[in-house]
Amino acid sequence: MSERRTTPRRSFSYYVRVLDDDTQKTIGHLVELSATGIQLETSVPLPLNKDYFLRMELTSDLADRAFLVFSARTRWCKTDTITPNLYFCGFEITEMVPEDRAIFQLILEKYGEETRRK
Image 1 (spheres, rainbow, N blue to C red):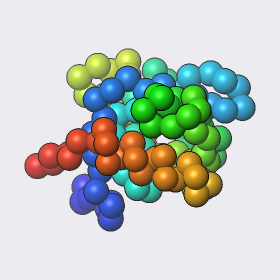
Image 2 (spheres, rainbow, N blue to C red; image 1 turned 45 degrees about the horizontal axis):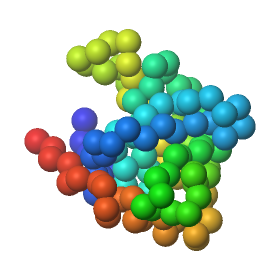
Image 3 (cartoon, rainbow, N blue to C red; image 1 turned 135 degrees about the horizontal axis):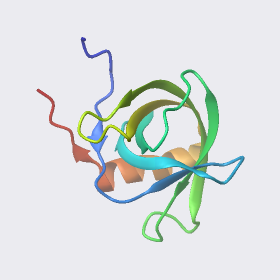
């Protein structure tokens, strides 16, 4: 399968929970991010093309608040090849206010590590 992504991804090695802002339940944990999307590790497969309001936890070195909220749509979801009871799900960010976009960009630059793909 050819890579269709147009923005570079960065891996994320810190533990960051991402919650459904409507239910306050954890959806997954951040694995990768780019300027236009995120990848989560989840315990259940998520339906494709579903819109979510997501809440990402923040640390005090990133912002003076505990979280940022944004809208995202599931674009793909697949089983982890090493741990088959886990799933990787990709989200396209559909809406984020400019103040949160600046914080998201700071996370990307400060903590994202360049992804090495074969």
